[in-house]
Length: 292
Image (cartoon, rainbow, N blue to C red; front, side, top):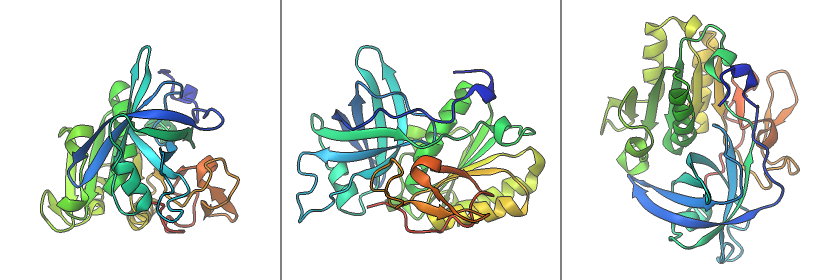
């Protein structure tokens, strides 16, 4: 990877069209599932990017649903010389699309397009005074945080991870994707770690640290992202958010993922995002996340 943060490309370009990849492994992780695809042709994705996935065959087997592919952030990728790369995805079964993806077995095939969108900036690019990074993940939004954390570790950049979940049934991926070092947990029902919201932990860090040296990154449910955005804007802390929104194409043609900009107009998350600065947008609550 380039040593100069300014040399880090804004995005990895996706090859045109979709490609057929094989499922190598699928396994439970808490209340979620992790499944692994072997992608022999695609480029290595950057932290914050996502893929459009559709199981093959029988994707639209239930009265035409799910029909459209699902936009899913990768949770990990590993290069394997001669066979391309392994892509891990963290799935929460909440509808026909995610349920179909979660039930795939080793040897099944999946249509893949991507990687799409832009990447997270490095801390010194987001905030020239940054001493490190604070990562705030909620639910399956911990996946892109895990990818960013690994890049920061590889670059020797210190980071702290704050992860929040509703309860144990709606959690997973922590030990496999993060381990325990510099990771704090919050559960709304108090079943583990801090009882309350992950934003409580963020407030504690920002109150204890010099906000001028902070850089915050976040992905999770819209309400959580809006809370993170407001906390950071009130304290003048630079923050990047990876937003979720319904997507039909991933190429910017359908305008289904548009969110309002702070200065007017709209951003298309598939090509202008999904990573956006908190001060770029009017709200992180626009639309509903594409989670089914």
